[in-house]
Length: 543
Image (tube, rainbow, N blue to C red; front, side, top):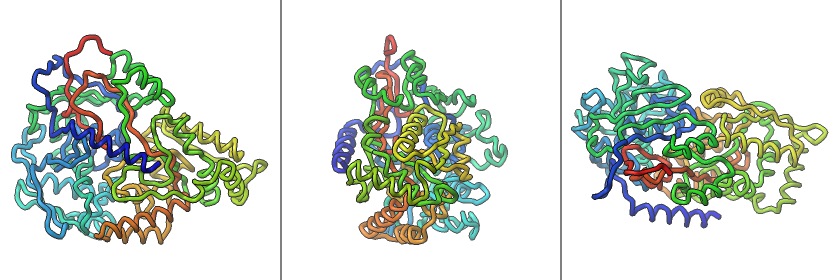
C-alpha cells in the first residue's frame, strides 16, 4: 500500500511540474478574462484566529496566506521559492541563513516592509507573553526553546536585522526543512506599530495592516471574510483576482448546494460518501490529490477511561481501516497505522504486527484486551466522544462509535462542538476522545511525532514517555539524516505501540472547483494556495 501511494504521489508531483506557478497569476496570451474577478470560496468553519502568531489551523492559514507574505512560499508543486525575500544564502555548516528582502515590498498602508518587521514578528511568536499555540515550531531557531520556557528574553532569539533589507537567522542545529517551515502562516512579518496601537483588536478589518496581495475589508463572524486586492503589494500588477470571499459553511451538503447554485466557485471538501457520484457528475471540476495530512483518534491519557492503555489499544485495533476508507470516508484515502502520513519525506512507515492479522484474529485480540482493561458487555466502558460540528466529523464519529458498540459493547455519548470551542476544549484537555486531522506545517515526520512530546502544547492527549522524548531530542540534534530518520522511526514505533493516538487514514484533498477558475492546479502536498495565483476566465452560464 505504501509503494502504491508513493507512485501516486510522485506521479502527481511530476505531472504538476508542467503547471509551474511563480509569485502570482500567469495568464497565457490570448486568454479572455472575466470582467468580474471575484472569488467565492467555502472555508468551512470560522478560523481560530487571523493573528499569524496565534494561527493553529488551516482555516486561518488559508486567509493569512492571502493577507501576509513571509520570506519564502511553496509553489504549486510544494517547491520553496522566493517571496518577501528575493534571495538567500546558507552558511557552509547550515546554521546561518541570510535573507535579502525586496526593497519594493510594502505594507497595505504604503510603508516599507523591513527586516525589523520580521524580527518583531518572530520574537513576538516565541515570547511567553504571547502564548502562541504553535510557538514550538520555532524551536529550531537559536534560543527559541529557552525563550518560550521563560529562561531567556525574546531579544536573544537568533534573528536579527543586519540592515533594513537583510535578515539573518541562526539555528540551533542544521535542519533541511527550515525553508519549508518558514513558508508557514506563523512566520510572516508583523507591523509593530499596528499591534501596539490596537492590541487584541488589530486583526479587525479597519485596523489590520498586512503585506500580502490582499487586505482585510470585512469580517462577518459566522458568515464570511472579505479580502480586497492590496494596491501596495509589490507584485500587485500580476494579481488578477480583485476580491476574495471566504464563506463559513460547516455543512458540506449545504456547500455543495451553494456550489451548484453558483454561489460558490469552490468547496472546502465534498460531502462524505458522495465522492464517486461527484466524480461522475463533475469529472473536470472535482479535484482530488494526496495530502500530507492524517486522520486519527486522540485519547486523553491523563484521566479515566483512557489512562488505560489496553482500552486504547482495543478501541484502536478494532477499527478496520480498509473498510473505513472504502465505505465511510470514500475519498481515495489510504489506511494507515503510523502517525506521519504517506508521502512524508525521509521516513519509512511503521506497520504493527496486529495489522497483518485476519479480521477474526483482530476481533478476538480486541475483545481480550477489552476484558483485560476491566470491561465486558455486562460491564461496558462508557466513553465520551467529542467532535467538531460538521457533517463529515459527525459521520466519522458515528461510524467509529458504532463499531465500538457492535464489536465490544462500548457505550458512547457523542458531543458536537463549534470549531473554536472544540479547539479550546482540546487545549484544556476537556475531552475523553476525539477525531482529529493534522496537516503538515512542513514536510518532515517531526511535525507529526512532535505532537506527542510531553512538553508540546499541542499534545492535547497528555501522552508522556521519557524514552520517546529522549529519542525526539536526539533526532532534533542529529545532523546525519540517516541517523535522524532511524531515531524518528524508533520513536514512532514506541508511541504507536502505546496508542496515545490511533491513526486511521492518510488523507487526500478533494474539492469542487469551477472550470473558469484557472491558474492553480492544486498539486501542493500541504494544500497551500494563494488567491493571487488564480484568475477567472470569461464564461457564460456557470456550470
